[in-house]
Amino acid sequence: MTAFGLTTWAVNRVGWAFGYNQYYNPYYTGSVVVDNSVYNYSQPIVMTPDETTLANDPNDLPPPSEAPDESLSSFDQARQQFYDGDYDAALQSTDDALKELPNDTVIHEFRALVLFAQGKYADAAATLYPVLSVGPGWDWTTLSGLYPSVDTYTQQLRALESYRDAHPDEAAARFVLAYQYLTAGHDDAAAGQLKALLKIQPDDQLAAQLLTELDPEAELPDPPKKVEPPKPSSPITSDQITGNWTAKRGDSSFEMDLDQDGTFAWSFTSGGDTQKVTGVWSIDDDGVLAMEMNDEGVMLAQLDLNGQTMDFYMLGDTSGSDPLQFSKQ
Image 1 (cartoon, rainbow, N blue to C red):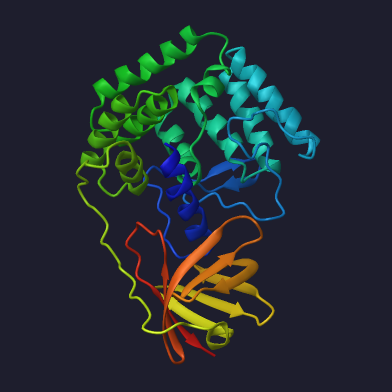
Image 2 (image 1 turned 90 degrees about the vertical axis):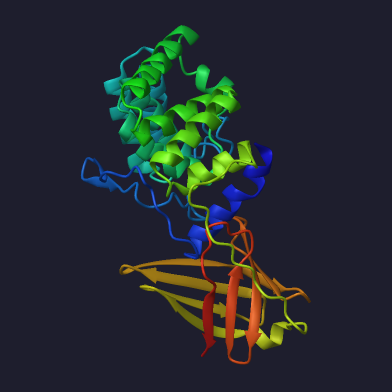
């Protein structure tokens, strides 16, 4: 699934970091409370530039030395407890690790695996959704290596399949099952689960993206509208767009500062919460603005400039979001 990894996951991460796209987890049922700390799975997992992570490669589970020692010991302990079949203790140790590294997708993916082993499929789906929204997840070698034997994993997979058969209209179980099939390399079986899932829950954007990658000819029940940015009639220069710009869309507000020195500051506010992104920017002759956020990804946007106003279309967006309509201050 290389193409999906190089395009959709990267676009998702950037779109949410800038607030361009609206995130929705259809399996979210409530925030997870960990010793007075709360992880809200209704929100995407967005790493800030100064955060550490256990592994940049989700299949490289041995954590680097620069991660906090307490988190490493908690996560190492969780993996050993899981290996030993003590799933309740493994979940507690995983939650302890998340207190220190709340945005680490490796720990969240492991948490979803523990929930799968416990037969808590709705909770596993809610946990998995933001993980798979920003990255491909583990491969079979990594997942199977967490078990003492493949037989143990197979028993849990058969339990999920039996649950799916008994509850054919439960989308969460099908989502977790599709993930298990994908991880094991059973793409056709995964596609079958995703097709059935989308009939039950047509607004699952991630399932639609995964299915499209597996089967480009698959018919989606509720495909997003296509938003085509116009091509500029003349080149856009950096001098024309340098300055402070603001925009509103729904209940969200955006501010973009493009400085002459090639740096930018971006902020968006929604529901009283503000998120900021900084980095460097440039624009090409075709009116494509590139905003690199501190080596964490690049926002590419087609601009449609009209004097003191500018429409901002994120390139690669598959959600059908309308452009941001900026005004120069």
